[in-house]
Length: 333
Ligand SMILES: [Zn+2]
Ligand SMILES: [Zn+2]
Image 1 (cartoon, helix red, strand yellow):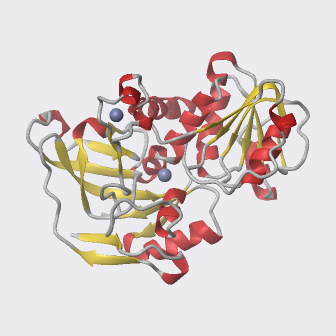
Image 2 (cartoon, rainbow, N blue to C red):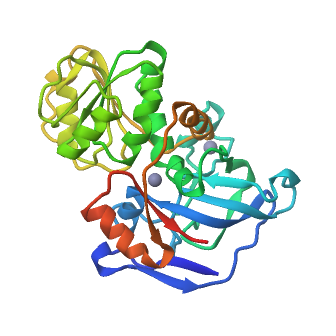
Image 3 (cartoon, rainbow, N blue to C red):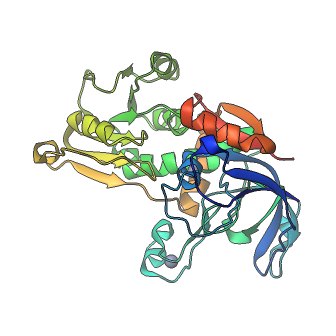
């Protein structure tokens, strides 16, 4: 089968990913063999390729927003899965035994495996996944539209849940209007939240207003009202400071990135009046499952730009230098 290998992290300008012919993996007990249809390209992949995240496995097949069809079943897997169209997210496996797993925080599991990071992922024609960690995909989504739901969408939804606003409503600030934010905005609106979008791009300001944001403007500008919670999608520490400045007393700031530049000059004044800062780490199966149904109900339609598997270095370079309004997806088969 054809697969894309990372052998040594380096800047994407140096084309570190190689397309190779390699043998097909075999599903073991509790696993399924998936024929990959397409796989989303995530900012996390960029951080892995460029060595900004500590690597757990080399060589590595990246990719954790996978849409494919189950072709073979390992021992003990429910026969109903055969031939089913499924998605594979970032959480590949959790132990089910540590204190985090037992308390419903499998995203924090200390023994967890992550797709396309600690195990091989979906930048390949075939891949193996744990049967209990794949998700059926709502039929209203095409393969290409479904791929971004599995990371940008799901982690955005977890961040939205962590704001606490789904239970009590209010004003939500979204900082950075990339693919995650695009998918979360309709869900937040359907839940009755007033959404304020902060972005440096004039075209994205326009898009945000068209998508239903009550206000949109540059990151350093003042919105017409204080925010009850905010989500920062931009991987930049200074944006977190800007978001804190706009929070209402008792407000919560949720950082959605797996990576962020240092948050410098954080004065206590910005945290005073019981403001909180919380990061978002990984996703649980509940996050993915809930988001898939919420997305369908809210009519979330990911905007997708496609590249072929062979063009993976170009796809990552585009994400680094000219991130498109929606998500980048590699077509595989
Ligand atoms: Zn991702
Ligand atoms: Zn665990």
